[in-house]
Length: 285
Image (cartoon, rainbow, N blue to C red; front, top):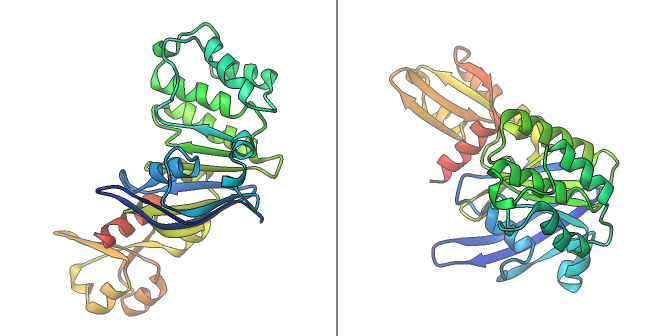
């Protein structure tokens, strides 16, 4: 699959935080989840991609072209959803849209009104009176109404109820179905990614830890449980991370067959995305 966005050597330094040579790519026809705990660097990375902060180094290419050479075209071809909303609270939805729509060369008012109806949003509603979840729906309606080729979203399911989160996932799948499109969204809540993501990129402390297909990761890793008497140096070396309690040990491993050869009595369970993410975080502490 062709890459729609390529990030190479992205750097940004603050007093107490640093993005360290962040590199990854986003493929066409994929939903890519950008995961990590709070403070890992997800929002900083997205702000750097959108040139909302000045990066200290790195190259970002959209369809093979450096976005620095034509930032306007890049932003015309993407849809953006932020957790914070970034709207004028005193305006109505109609007035806010009137300010934003002319910025896009392919604004589709018919599609926009369809999304407003789907999300139960009214043109006369004042943005400041909307709940966090409703603001997120409005931002999503805007992002999906100008024929964007790439959606970039920061914690888009924050504040959404379970029913709307399921609807959100279905909308993303429908969005990429025509082909030539991609979704890149950050979250520290990995539940939705089990249902939606094709690729996963994990960042921790400003460093990319992995970039893998979701199904590959879930097939590769297992939760392993057993009595502490089995926790030999050989077993420890085969686990990414493990915890000990009075009931035994629980670990995460990508070497399940080797552990089974040594101790057939230990128990294996399928690992979740959250299990894998937290194991990487704990191991790096």
